[in-house]
Image (spheres, rainbow, N blue to C red):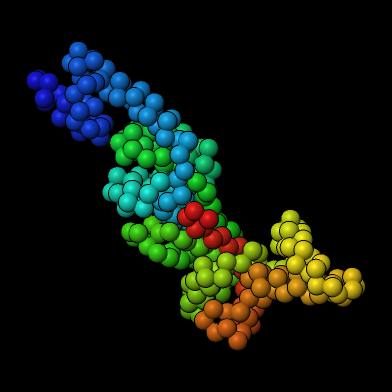
Length: 283
């Protein structure tokens, strides 16, 4: 086999560039397996240098069905790479693995892909080939008893890959058609309104404390008496809770009503919003 044929074979098996393959074949004295190992080592070296860079682009992949559904975020440096076929194929495959592993990302990284290499090994090879930092970001899986899962993707890049995605799990034993419409619309509402929790009582104390601090800072130079400032502060923080809890937000499709009003109108006695998760690239 000529060196040119070896280079072509090495390119096909590793995805590396023609020049890199040629150098590797030369360094390995024509041994393709050794050349592949040289490229792998160089790939790791290249990847480690790129990991200090910022990766705020990428896609969110949605995988699964109404019983079990997952989101996973894969980041890269530029929107151009987010639309690259090698990147997209990598994301699609690991999103399926992620769903099967219930979003346990540490297990995901050591799991084997179709080419018998681990996710981490394939990630390093992809970084070397594309030339950008690529990272596995946040992930979430919903699988609850007596629940149906819904999803919505916004700013779609390709099929189930987007810049923003939402998961919602609705708990009920009812199979009304209205439920499926509501599930999809609720995902769209969450994408637009970005609630912090289902109910106001579940908003994290750290968030409320920070918001209270900002409100007090705004009011302290108003010249009003301290008791009035405290009353205004309580009113403002209550409004903040109302605006950021899903059930008390104005329904995006009909803003004169709240989300809890729409729930009542469905007339499904056992219906409950079990959980939701909103994931936006770069946020």
